Amino acid sequence: MLTEFPLDKKSISRLASRGLSLHSIRSQLDDGLDFSLELWRAQGLNIVKKRGYFYFDTKFTPIDKAEFCIVDIETNGSHLDRHQIIELSAIKVINGEITDRFDTLVKCNVINEHITRITGISAEDTKDAPALKDVLYDFKLFLGDAIFIAHDVKFDYRFISGSFEMVGLEPLLNRSLCSLALAERTVVSFRYALSYLNDFYNLNPNATHHRAMSDVLTTFGLFKMSLKNCTEHINNVEDLIKFSKDAPRLKRPKFDPLKKVEEEKKDEESKE
Image (cartoon, one colour):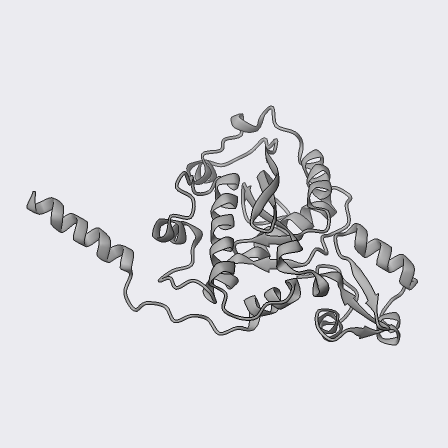
């Protein structure tokens, strides 16, 4: 997922696989190559030259050496033009271990009752929280060039990237990975909502759904399970991203196993 990136889809695919020629990359740039490479690096995307061709550096990054940033946001609505982030949490992960954390509420003057019921966050809770601009500037530094992971990543990535632009920052260009898409190819489940996966696999025993850090830690548990279950030969981060998009989805059970467990529990209780 590359917002505001000047290269076409075919070129992006080649950057992630067999490499892009100097002629191809220059033909699509309005600015000089060196300037563009530096700008993209500042936006979280590193492109390197090897054997005369250009690649995403993640093409050469083994999974156990890669820095992943698992992210979740809560917002007071889904429309960027009139809503904002009210909570932003993230963890940095290298080789299955958490190396750093980012966790904050965001000052927001209006949070409607529906959002408060879902998240438990009210405008009063955020009155002493930092302003959105300050949070986003700090988060940009925290994120760096890590691979951006979220459950149904498009929403979080686009909302954060759009919020960056609203406060005067350049949009995100970090390589991204969807934990939901990866789970569909590595974890058998009747449903793939994060709350359902947690109920079924007990990924985060202390989960509070729709609170950002709780959902981040649940996603972390799911990500580790997905990597453990992955039977494909994955050499690097780009292999993993491709697998999450292109590999066949696993067959889902016809019936909800959690519902069956609940019914059996009720039957047992009725006999007591």
